[in-house]
Image (cartoon, rainbow, N blue to C red):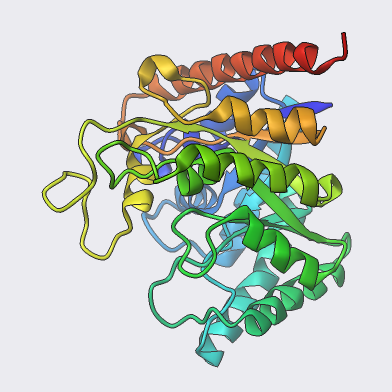
Length: 346
């Protein structure tokens, strides 16, 4: 079975006035069964409760998480995970590492309040103060997994390769690390956008493509189907992105000094899956074919989208985004139905 979810941030930024509770309600109305709770959304909902603009207390954050849990229960919507627990693995400074582990203990409390057992960890994207030393990275991630196993109920971790990660940016690398961590509560979040945007797409190229993009993708997906244990994929995110008119180079509106083009593109120009009418061009069908048909994976599939339009303040936007996401889910299911039929022997 596949279960549909959506990232709370993909229904409008809370900093633009879109309340987390409203977004959950609209997700449920649009037919979604689950929601990924983006920490910023939870944090700003706690600010609403406190009546302040920034930095809510941990007590209020826990209250906000409990309220979210209650609302989700009434709407029969599952909190799939809390995310993203960012920029942890490979930290060089021991004090920073300790601070992150202290924060993780609080995230365990938030998970219990939310009613979820899953935390997503994206690959570290910090440009300074981190190491690529594999032994250190595996040790860091094994530490969080061991701490998760000590919780009641145990907390799982989904490690996601983001395409602008400083040292690790492909699913192959995160899978190799997960195998070395070698604990039952540590697995992967496979993100279709990040797979495509790393090996196939390049927003800094005039073509929007990497060199040898087709061969690179073909080989990547062959390895994925052959190598990954489906049970270690804890959930999947799907999404597309706009093909830009011009490459992200100096002078482009999305160019930023010290910001990787893929990050800027991802933050400003992503779309829901299969929105080709809005300029989506990533090879989603081939990646989804590999994950859902060839590998036969089942579980939570989350619609994730980041776009500069999420900062629009119109109250109607949340409902419109939920409808778009629901249409995207329908297109995804339609594709899978056809792909599954084609894969059956004659």
